[in-house]
Image 1 (cartoon, rainbow, N blue to C red):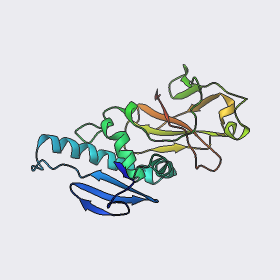
Image 2: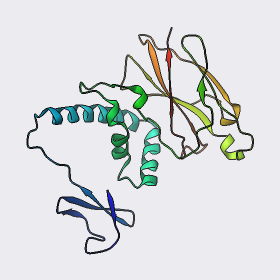
Image 3: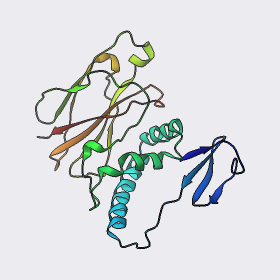
Image 4: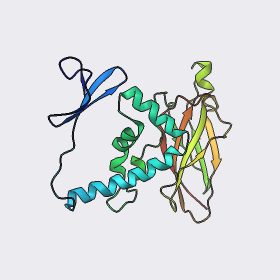
Length: 214
């Protein structure tokens, strides 16, 4: 995607010589149209379609939570056309060609521009318990120290369902979090830890952890 700053295409919209021209805010952008290999059943097309279908399924789950706004706002900040497009761009490589998640570590469920705390690390804990510590920074602004610690969780028996644990009562200033996790039928929890401000209109990028369940 390129910004068009001058010329006849400035302010235009539509298709022109293999590009789609569109407006975002007061700016004009051009993006190359996807190439077509002429064979919808080609191996490369099938691979891309499988990954795309899996990513779209995950995004639909995200849309049912307040994390939808995190993607929308981050897309605006990066000047990407939509949160949907940004989600696909960030996550398409995490999926296998059989409509499954290939590597949960490659998934991003929460994007954002707030600073992730330093030395955010998982500590030893019993099965079914997430224990995390990070460097509390009293010198950080009072407003930032009120940022709330939250989790987006995917259990391995329902890989396309995202559960949000939001009422933790833990803030950035605490420097530690211990949270029990349990779900009948699940053997592992994939965890995407993040912080958000009181208004829930600013977020950190998530940090990935996982926990074996009892």
